[in-house]
Length: 385
Image (cartoon, rainbow, N blue to C red):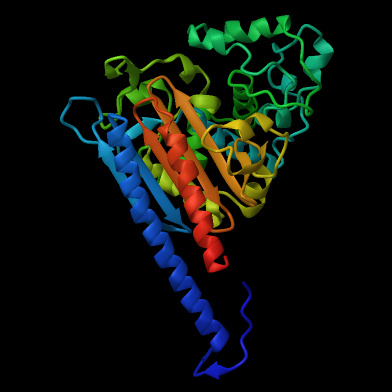
């Protein structure tokens, strides 16, 4: 809603006063939304007997609500707090897309460069097909490869070098850039390009360019870093007798860009704010535009159980999913790895974002996020935002 000033009262126009009233109303609505979400979050985790979790809701550079629930380990004393570290699983991809975009903006990478120029050992059954796959295809899941290529070998903890050598047995199911095929192994090939052009290891580069400048003090990359964290949430899987703690698995840590980041909910509040444009010295507006520009269609997302009533379209950008939620853009990603689930999302229109972390595998996280955004956009509609 555009409000034009006409009459002046003191130094403020009526239009300005109305705008202030509108902003105040919007803030109170978001506060109410945050409080109601906290109750819902706690209720759903309790009902589903999850060991623990955390959430955060931010607006611009403010934390509206941060909540924690339950234990770091089922049946143990330490509670989850704002600094408890979880595995982010595929939410790690949001960092990889941003790191690559940083190097593109600096002229050190180009999305059109073939991945084979950085990973010469990568080939396909027809070597010419391998040469067609570029960095943009890698980061945007549009390589043309069968979805989740060789995830089965990662699940079996086969060494990544050996897995890369097996790509010469594959033929694409479509030309690069045409169809969507979600990848973990191939997505992580971006690590080679990032390391070669940044001259840092992936872990050091993400620390230097994202974690340190955003004061994400608990964030790290890798298996050893996670095990060395004393305030960490332990993984739990659901069995017939309820949630049971399991060991932290190292296999997907081989794929640092795809699934290697660890962080607390406090860290994710800072990551959300940066992606809302609050830290342009770290993530510029042009980079945000780059990574959130819709790429290949992801029509399978439209059939997600808890989201399908609301999604009008779904695409993948560069490390982020781009949804149209009841006609409004929503930037989103989820992650799931043995014993953990994570979700992060934000609305560039409303300038608010939310994230959740659970140390037990449960689809309740998708229900919670879909309901949150349904409520948020309904309230925005009432406010004329």
